[in-house]
Amino acid sequence: MTVFRKEMRANAVSFLLWTAVIGGLMALCVAMFPSMSDSMGDVSELFAGMGDFSAAFGLDSLQFGTIMGFYGTECGNILGLGGAFFAALTAMGLLAGEEGGHTAEFLLTHPVSRTRVAAEKLLALAVLVIALNAVCFACGGLGILAIGEEADWKGLLRYHGALLLMQLETGGLCFGASSLLRRSSYGLAMGLAAGLYFLGLMINLDAGLDVLRFFTPYYYADAARVFAGEPLAGAVLSGCALGSLGAWFGLWRYGKKDIAA
Image (tube, rainbow, N blue to C red; front, side):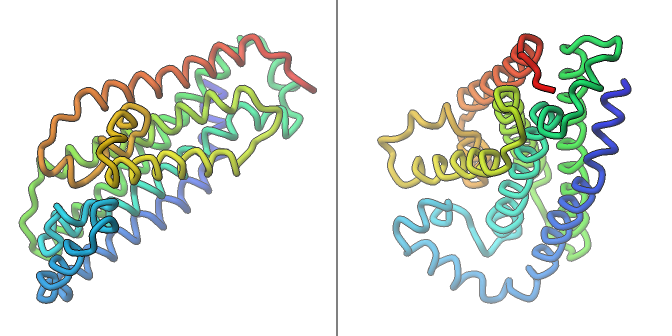
């Protein structure tokens, strides 16, 4: 597991920074809820009447004046976007980074197969994403307990599970894309994560684009759908398949790739 440990060390600073920022913002948002709760009823009515803007972000169905609606809108967007960007950026640098940094010739001279190298890198990605989500869930959950609010803990666990799966899917897709590149392209990683997010907004705006739910993880990780108990099994299975396909492609392509020195 030498490659795994190396990747964990290499990404430790990035992990700590992203986790501190995302977790800290989530805890701060939760802490602000009691001081804002008295005016939340008027805010909910305002958001509900903003037409397409409300529909795009699910504000027409989430009860912004409740802790769950507030959490899904504020904390969910922070973790949903921040976690996806972290997963995408980390994944994009795993395979292409060896060629871009001219370390591939050193790594691949060791008695370890390319498939194992890629698999350990993929495992490191999964552990980092899971750890980030665990810390952020703790920040949000402890924040809710600290302010004395009653939360739907089962719904909250489902929502965080959907966010975790969404980030793993995004990471898997970027891992596959990384195997095609000679050097890391962080712009591509950010663009892919942002593109998936905007696909989710488009579905909310136009019911005729509902077929896109099979191509963006932001459909099944939408707070309004999760808390409403909508059936999301099809989108979840599709997301698992796409993420797994991206990860498998990265493993396969790296094993066949002509590695540049």
